[in-house]
Length: 89
Image (cartoon, rainbow, N blue to C red; front, side):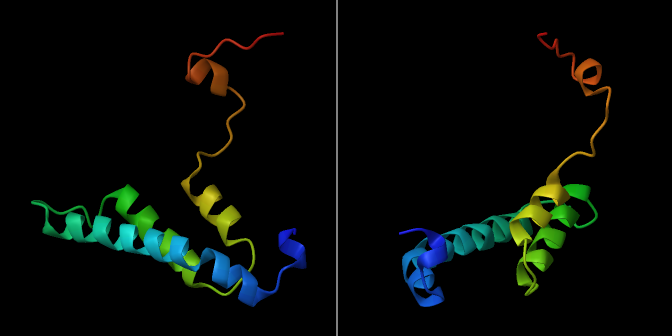
């Protein structure tokens, strides 16, 4: 059965434990950051995590896409030379 044919209740039943585990994992990671020596509150990656969490809380579509774009590098046409990659013809 495709996802389009499932009810929201069926999707929740199927996904709940996995989502719960992922949320717990994120919480544990943030707790480890809080307990560690030093402060990364102003670090760019920490800010990206905060922005990603805010996107998750929004009740708007395409959250996964918006989070992917948040963590992605902007497209640069010269990326092969920047990353020292040789493209095959």
